[in-house]
Image (tube, rainbow, N blue to C red; front, side, top):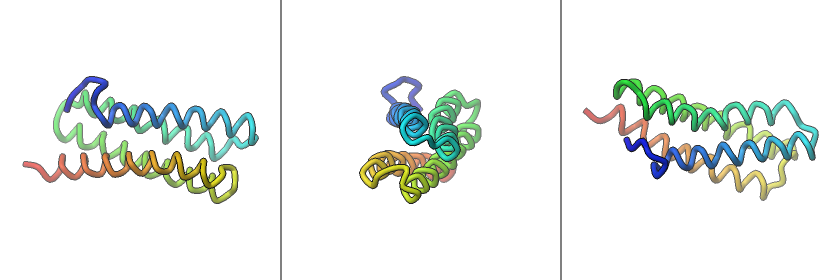
Length: 120
């Protein structure tokens, strides 16, 4: 896997983390919501951190394990975003916008994990 910033999953996971940070600020400052947004902040920023760790992995197994953790964090982020939308802290447009990015990460990470563990 490429170690540079032109790596798709590195770039997209970092951009997602930045969106999550901005969303966290908005939810805390404008909506006075602190619990769900903190959960999203943790899981949403963890995706990219685990991707970066995976790229520096010591083995294929290490790489796959870290990417799998990133996948789980993306899935958790999807859950928090859905809750924020359904509890009306986010408008449908706000929820759909960030959910689209999250689901794109889920697809990419799923593909990486499958190809890592299914290749010989």
